[in-house]
Image (cartoon, rainbow, N blue to C red):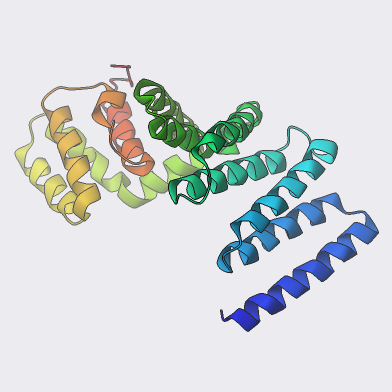
Length: 241
C-alpha cells in the first residue's frame, strides 16, 4: 500500500471509531483501535500505536476484564514495547512495563482452556528474561511455552497432518530399523535448518534419550511438538530432564 492508501485507511478507521463510540459498542472500539495500530506501525508511528493499545486496554479493563480480548491487547502491547526496546527506540527500563503486560496476559489465558494461546505471552516473557540476562528464568518460560503449545489440540492436529506419516518411521528407527532411519533422514533433510535440528533430536531418541525438554531445548514450538508426538508414540512419556 502507498502513503495515500494508508492515509485513506486511517481516515476510515477514525470514522469507524466515532461511529462505534456513538452506538456504544466497546468490542467494536477495541477492534478499531487494533486496526489503527496497523496503520500507525506501517507509517512509522509506534508511539501512536502504543497509545491505541492503551486506549483499547482501558476499555477492556472496564468492560471485558479477564477476557481473551483483554489478554490479546496485553500481549500485543508487551510485544510492541519489547520490539521498540530491541530496536533502540525505547528505553531498556521499559522492560519492566512490558513484562507486566505479558504476565497479566498469561494470568488471564491460563484460566481459560488450552486453546487460549498462553504460549504467545510466555514467549515474550522468555525473550524479556534473555534481554535482562536472566538465563535460567528464560529457560523456565520456554518450557512453560512449549507445554502450553503442546496442550492445544489444534497444534497437534497440524503436526499430525503435516508430518504425522513420518512418526511411525521414526519409531521404527528407534527399534533399530535402518531403512526407516534412512527414510526419516531423507525427508527431514528437505526441511533445511529446521530439519537438521529435528534430525539431531531424532538421532538422540534412536540412541535411547527420552527427555523431551532436553531434546528440544533450542527448537521452535512446531519442531518440539513433533518430537513430543514421537515420544508419546513410543510410550515413553515426556519426563523433565
